[in-house]
Image 1 (cartoon, rainbow, N blue to C red):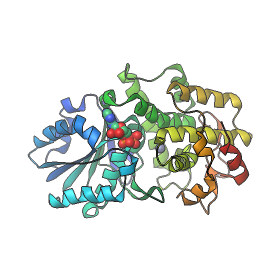
Image 2 (tube, rainbow, N blue to C red; image 1 turned 180 degrees about the vertical axis):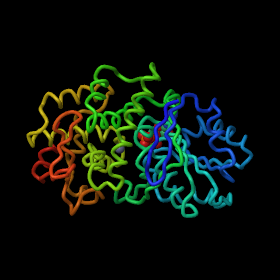
Image 3 (tube, rainbow, N blue to C red; image 1 turned 30 degrees about the vertical axis):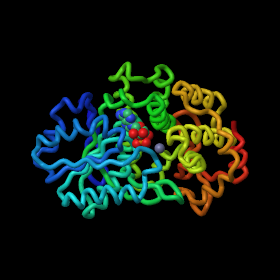
Image 4 (cartoon, rainbow, N blue to C red; image 1 turned 135 degrees about the horizontal axis):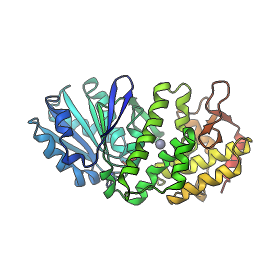
Length: 361
Ligand code: ADP
Ligand code: ZN
């Protein structure tokens, strides 16, 4: 079994295991650990997998509750968090309760946030069921909810107790969601690992080859792990992980989340590559290679008109990552090689360049 150790505030393992529910791993890891379990999931994932997980955990003899909410970014709210907390309060969950997040990034973000504040913090185990959550939410400790003013504006840092990555969950994941998750994996290659990118060019990842897929997810997690460990507080290097997100978050907000996170980040990466090119760093050939890989996963390559029509600057002002309303972006020198100057990993983008990029197509 592949396993990756993450040293965050606490040390935890990401365990790569296929067919998790037919293994004894969960039982062994959770034995005599919790007085109650609360599985937090969305309605779709819950219908597919929650009962099996509940049956497994019930073998341990502690009560197991399932608390769900409707899928989608629109339900990643403070109201949803409050409802989940009500379930836990009514079940008289105490500090020795384990929260188990079963689902995609939305579920892990909300469940992680619930776990961060319930009784001032209870352990949370992540069982990501989307590719995006496997490569992204497993590491970094970011949890939170959206508010009308913006995405993830209310949240907390919370490290999971353990993460189980089972690629078998992806067999039920719609292809469009799989492709959405590929974006973060491609992002990790672009900011840090030219070899991984070359592998992505050689081979289109799919469930046909689960071992290869698992291996690539592992490498992607390793890249994020290394960056987060060097810069846990996002003072410098961790800004690299925002590649595609500076612009991507604005695209998501403008579209009122009609555009999926991964798709918005794919467009964001292209715009940020455009900055890189206009500033004289990235050569057009590299941008063409990036577009080709994104195209393999049917990701959008041009901005929809609705996104072009509003002023991005107004949206940037609300983004918690923009300093004094100024826009900073990761700039690539080449695939796998970000431009770093004076210890800075993100660079000022002028309003003129920003306005020019809005017409990018
Ligand atoms: P992410 O933020 O990781 O992209 P979400 O939590 O928004 O993911 O999940 C994306 C969608 O996919 C949701 O509608 C969710 O219910 C659904 N989903 C998540 N995991 C699975 C799965 N393994 N099989 C089928 N549908 C899934
Ligand atoms: Zn992301």
